[in-house]
Image 1 (spheres, rainbow, N blue to C red):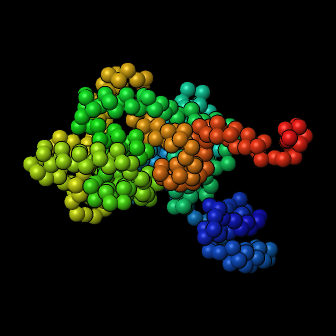
Image 2: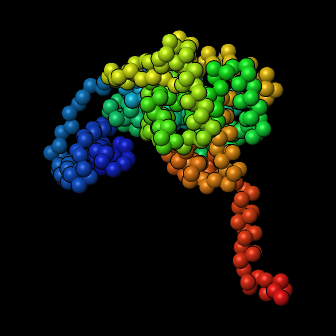
Length: 391
């Protein structure tokens, strides 16, 4: 027998519950704030002590299987809160990594050891640490939603310990050198001139491919030499950038001239006008004029560009296998090589915090750190006295 007061999900503003354990049965009741829950719990304890509280016998509800609830999670939660590429990625993880283990298991039958064993198996199978982390995050998200909907009382994916290898974010950063980037642009100017301006935009702004594809002329301020990154295009839909926030990036003189030339080229190839598309993001919006449409004036398909243009460009430029996303890393690495501060790089890249910039690119500024400590030698009169360097 006992009465416990706690939150099912910890956090400010989350409701408090009382858990009444009596005669082999458990009853839960959502109260609200902690103080109210403690008052109710005190009263329940008094009644239990004198035998005045009779707990109702409630039939146990039939709980869904993991397959049933994961489908519910995608349809009612993920599709309403996540971008198309994100929830489609969730569907792929569920299909390829989770249903084979838990398809017919009831949600309350999946315990913490089951989650740990599955993740360890995925880790041993050779999946990258990032992939395993993504699987873990999705499992936790599904069970958190089940707790929120009062399907379960606890999330078995919480507090699993530190057995999962952490991904080394620096390992995925493979920027081009300045010479390689110049060679890529020179090759594009000859072999794919219609895409030269797009590649230069990626290399001079650090914008993600989806952000470049979703760029509109109204986003470019030629008077103040800056670009407002406020949308992305992927999976056949427009949405906000990855951070869900817009950002302003600086535009170099070379990029400004190239974009103006590209605008003139577009007008020539589209009967004197700029191609327009409609942006639908929950509601109909006005048409926008895309900066880098395909030949038909529609949004460029990133997958087609990778398959038909990108690979050939790398081969013609005699460059190693490189992802388009590495152009973003190249932008950051070249800025840091030029001695630009990490805070400026953070703002241009649109990172949520300076810690992200440090985690990904901090190793690229090691040389400047050595210069900093050397300057301490130059500025230390006491050290010069000890070493006899003063005349």
